Image 1 (cartoon, one colour):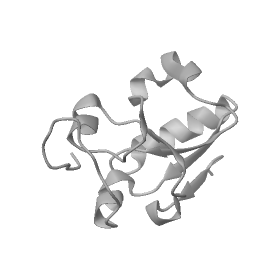
Image 2 (cartoon, one colour; image 1 turned 180 degrees about the vertical axis):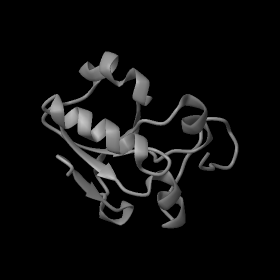
Image 3 (tube, helix red, strand yellow; image 1 turned 45 degrees about the vertical axis):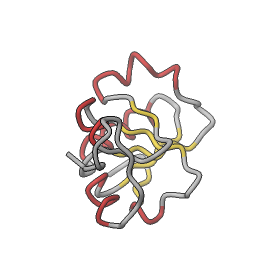
Image 4 (cartoon, one colour; image 1 turned 60 degrees about the vertical axis):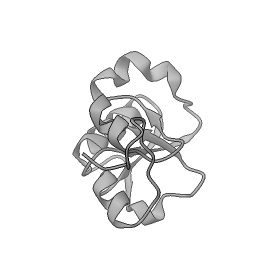
Length: 108
């Protein structure tokens, strides 16, 4: 049983605080505009970058890493929601992507 909520990409509010926990190369290739990038393995050391009073919508490529991250964040007292299907579903749903490499955004 999960101790955090899971939503689909279509249920992520337009003004949501999105936390992307994918690796650097995945982020550079394509991500949700305005998202915060903290790779999963860096999360414990960068916790101070997150607002404990804000609902965080945690996303990765398919939902596995974001599930673990959301579960861990809730255990640390944060409000975290897992985004099911991750960036793969984000792309399939037609939600906007941006890249940091000057190329057309893609999900890796």
